[in-house]
Length: 316
Figure 1 (cartoon, rainbow, N blue to C red):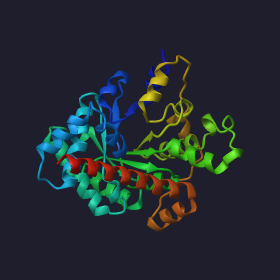
Figure 2 (figure 1 turned 180 degrees about the vertical axis):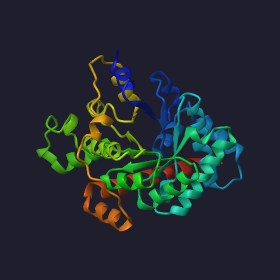
Figure 3 (figure 1 turned 90 degrees about the horizontal axis):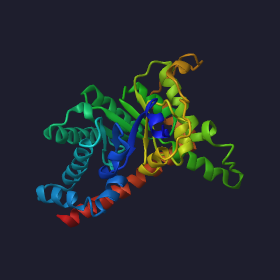
């Protein structure tokens, strides 16, 4: 049995791509997208008509409305391929505006519902800022489920658990990138692999905290750099994986055993924790990696959202 099939026995596998034509070969349950992945997809000949057709159908509408139509159109195509859920992202430029994030999320969900898709099949992706987490808390109370992304710290995870969000996406690879860059020539790849990888350790600590304290929020490890990181998180609720790493897992039959377990977490001595806004902001301030990577992630997604705007505006 290949590693991908072995992984599926312990963890829900999610495809991290906007390329829905490539997705089917890996039979993921769910799929995630983000502005960068959608931008990449619409520039490919296979997907360009999807953009032009959507723009043509909504000519005269405001740019932000057409963007949402394009995102949902991709989501609808993805939902024809996966049996589970698709994650669709709110514009990263709204990451510090709770009310605007809530409004945009409601609009995205309304578009899905108008196309006959139920709320159980959509997750609204929102950056894990304090404002984003509060928006998610409000949306969850309305039955709109959220995927809190750009999550790099334990504090962000605690606040998401407090907010009762459906799912979080801690970014394994970007945490790894930061520590590797900081260490420079001192970095020892072998010593910092597997369970010692700083990104893996971050996700494992969040998973164990949630399971110890009965927090229902799902943990979905994201942003992987290598197969070793994935193998070290087998047993996590979900893992969202790029097509190249899905292919690498499919290509090997090496044994894969679960590394995380809810049962093991329940036996651990992990204190309960809850954070108000002041405590959250202080914890983030104390965590240089999380502060830098969250800001960088929002900036990068905002740049790609701007490029998508430009492509759509030029197609109008």
